[in-house]
Image (cartoon, rainbow over all chains, first blue to last red; front, side, top):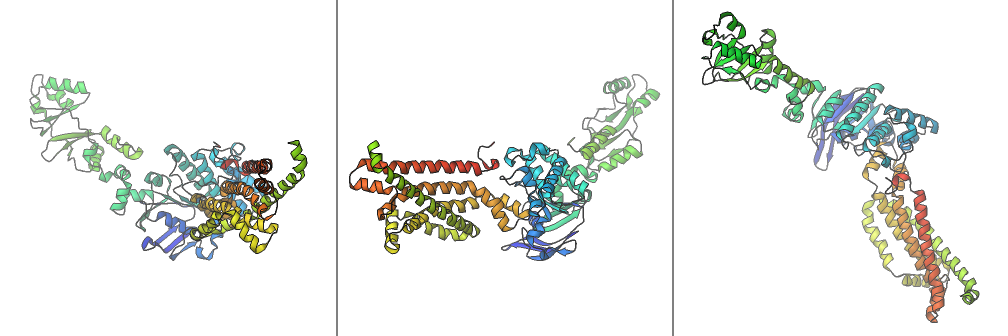
Length: 373
Length: 212
């Protein structure tokens, strides 16, 4: 377990980290996120003492990191940096084995370890071990960067925006690989990013920082469901709109194109309109587009006579909502009252749209799978 | 030509050996001192703003003056020449060592520290290997430079290819001047090529420019 207690850090007069308290459990994937300059990288680097804190304490498994020799401490904590930083004068194998050889593992053990690790990321030892970093793509280099951090089997790994310099496709597959490795070996990972997609994808716990303070530390689900304040909400941006149904309103999901007729239409005409659009009811409005009710194919069948106006066939027993009511309300009407559709009326009872089961499921799908419908 | 070699061949070979001796000894000593100083300076870059200009002033003192002054104090021994040449050899290597180490990108130093390397390990495993190509460029400059400065040794009667050149100049004998100048030029070019070769050998594939 890692524990930050009242940790502070300033550069000159500027306070970068203000009294951070944070507990990280073994095997947890923690993502520090926030706008640039929020102190997330400083918080990370104080753990392996690349940056020394001004006050406060950090404990790893109950031991104060100040009691360790910083060099010794670091060889026991994996570290991946954004700019990859593979040593260009060393081969892939030498790079992976940097920490083991500092720890004086024998050569054969180092080689075995390199082999084993390279297999994890599908880079065959025979093909890549003797290559130099500049002979590989950025994605391959950062895979080796991750392996270097894993090599001496440290229980804790720090990653400082490790995928920031990679193209989106490579980034995506590295995220999957790192997450899989982390789960497989039960590593504790502390990961800094400013990319919310990445945080939501990787994290067990998201720690949202701003201005040197922790605004919220919670599971991705909780952060999305109940952002602590406007700063967090703003940073979540599109994710929260997708996710939070209570925020989604009827006007977001209604169909604006509504088939409607005025009440002076005759029955046969209405039936032909219905069959043309393949629908079983028509919305009736007056000349000002005010809602009058609906006419269904059944009532026309039962009571309608050819040539008569539909005026007497109108039913008003139809669920309606305002464009501003929550999507949940429309959803409940559709499911609980077994309505086929909900008519959306504005304050003047003018018809502005219709929500059918199809439009509702489309909207839900965009929440679950993303996309802007 | 044949006549000339019969007359001067032996002393020419002698002079070339002495000349090369001066070059090797002073460059070797200069290299060690410069490397140590350069590393030391790179640990405290703020001192370098004072120290580097001071050392570079020595560089602007003409060699002829410098050897003359040392001659007065130390006397007519090879040591005088070695000191003077060594001091000239130091600066290019020192400067390139210092700059080479400082130019090692921060990311490598941070990664090295983050991996748990001690400052010494960072220096020897990362900084020096990455600075090596730059350091060798300095060594090359020094060597070629010293080949030409070593001509001055004969000014205080200490041999080397300068003997031919000075005697040639004072007796208006072009043959002698050329007999001194051409071997000196060949030595300079030859040593330059030798160092290029060494540089290629010691630079790992990953550091070679255009290796992609």
